[in-house]
Structures are given as structure tokens and as C-alpha cells.
Length: 81
Image (cartoon, rainbow, N blue to C red; front, side, top):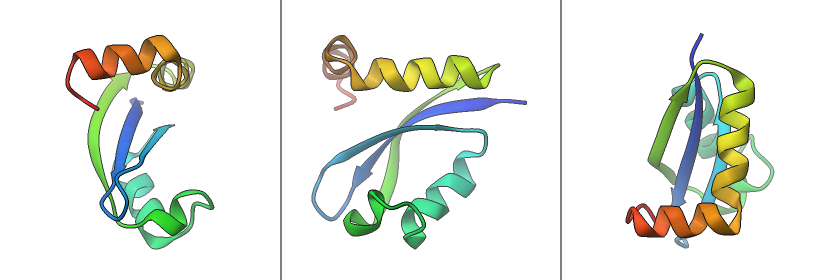
């Protein structure tokens, strides 16, 4: 099974959301249908970046990295944010 760490961009107000999942397409549909509490008020969303991992743990660790100061610096250096 493949797991993903991903970054979404709100097309409504330009904010970012960082997450991890086993099914990227299903998760994006959940975000855009209002099933996720935080993302509901910021719809619509689009995926701007994702990475694949072999384990859920690796994907969650990468998600946490994206949320860290060093992660945000890395994302800005790579022109992802």
C-alpha cells in the first residue's frame, strides 16, 4: 500500500492545508465536499504538492515536517509555497 503526504491550496482564500492519507483522490473529494471540519469553510481545494511513502508513519512524519519551521522554509525554497 502507498501512503501520501500532501499540501492543499484553498482557491477561496489562499491558505494551505497539510495532511496525509492512503488515498489522495478520496481525501481531496472529502475536503471539497465539506466532510473535513477545518477545510469545510475554505473550499474549493486543489492539491499543489504530494509525496509517496511506503508506510503511514513515514507519511505522517513528512506531514509534520511540512508544518514545522524548517519544513516551511524547505517548501518556500522549492517554490512549493
